[in-house]
Amino acid sequence: PAEVGTLSLEFHSLARATKRPEFDAGPDDVRRRMAATVTLLNSSLVPLSLKSSGGAHPTGRVSLGAMGDSYYEYLAKTAILDPRLRPTAGAMFKAALLEIEQQLLVPREHGRTFLAEASMNGRRGRPAGGASAAGAPRAPSDKPLFSKILKMDHLACFLPGTIAVALHHGVVPRGEGHEEVAEGILKTCIDMYRMTPSGIAPEILSLGPGNTPEVRRNDRHNLLRPETAESLYFVGLLTGKPRYRRAAWDMFAAFRAGSRASDGACT
Image (cartoon, rainbow, N blue to C red; front, side, top):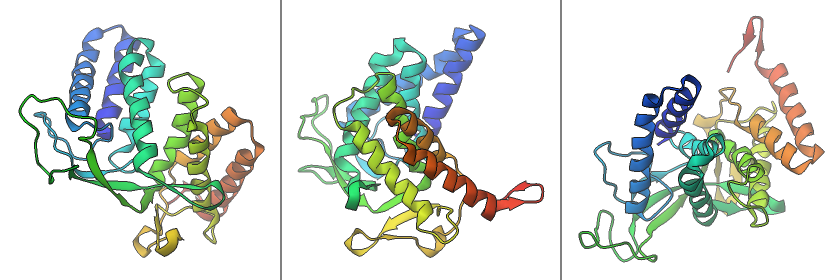
């Protein structure tokens, strides 16, 4: 769904900038289809693979990393960009955030929070692919079953900043614990940098026995991604805490030392 979120926001922005509403026809249709998918799944967490023909079964992987990230990010930003869409895109982001907090978070020591992935495995009381009676509304208890996958992409570090921006603009309310969630996830993102000798984060962090952070061999690379830097900026503005400015400087210094080349920078 990442591409869905990206293209929807880009074409909606193009329609606003050019004052040509035909550019928004596609995003309008996509938003309706995604809302229908969420209703059919009875979950605001959407599997990474969707069929353009419509329809969805509660199976597959859920991730705020690769292939999933921009869908959730741009729900919030669409609601901020166009207040007319706050009742739809804003409500969908708020519902998704609540479900992320319920299904994907792994609390760790010292206020840190790991943002896991998950596998959808059918519904409570039914195997994967099982269906309710045709046309029957989903019961609140008829939610998908989730099994956590203890893997966190660096890409997922966009979420603390998106929560901060959503809080600032009132897309989600303050005082319900969302700020603490953002800070907990961001602490893990900072740890991804501080745990390596170079001070540069791996592409993926996993949890081993006892929820101990570990970096697997194939994940020991960095693609100069901006997500943690963005979140440090926005969460720093929201909270006013200087620790995030210091963490950002440490990252900058590590990249200068470890990735600088004669004609730019390299991964």
